[in-house]
Image (cartoon, rainbow, N blue to C red; front, top):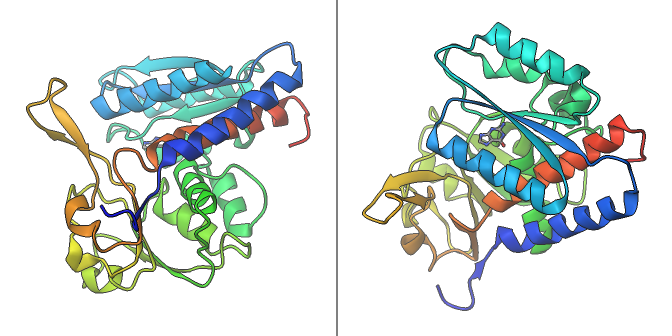
Length: 297
Ligand code: GUN
């Protein structure tokens, strides 16, 4: 990649956010630390790794975490709901996160809706998603909020721009579309939301001033999908088997070699948005802690 092209490095932005949280926690002088509960069902490699990253970062900045792991062959939706109800009532727990994906027998949306809205640090419950659409304060899902922080840090305004998002999930696409169309300096974008039924995908993605990819097709998006000088945010993370000691490498949806000569800037995989998801989760946990303990938020 030539020097005129920019790498959007999420870890740099994440470090700034982690430091802000650390400083704020040190100033608070509260008898206990914020506490977030992670619920993981099964041992899917990516989920184990994501939750471990979240636990490690929490520890590093002074946030307590609890990990509960359930056997997917044993746990029912009702039992998981019961666990969540107990955590909702537990005054020593500020935030609750159920790592996706869940086994097919458990409905992720039902589970998200069972989390108390003021502990819903993922922001996937109906109340927080509704508040996001209403442009009222609440918990904003971490990956979309992280993408906006990345744009802010690099002073890339989405206002008036055409943002094309290839993902319609509750985790990325839908909340990101809501955020970027808000009446705010870091919103005001024109958004096209694409998904597996979108026809002529490359025609749509080629219109993007800012292109967000999150469809889990490693290396699929080459120069045919990208117009010159676009800002490309790659959020697709797939483990692709290779002969390295750990047995895989992480690959984004973009074919990095093919698109990097064309784009204006790119948030790559790895090293782009990933660390920001963790940073925004920590910020949401701090916010939940303040809500629970009547600090001004
Ligand atoms: N799986 C992939 N990303 C996320 C996320 O941000 N939150 C949860 N709960 N699960 C995920």
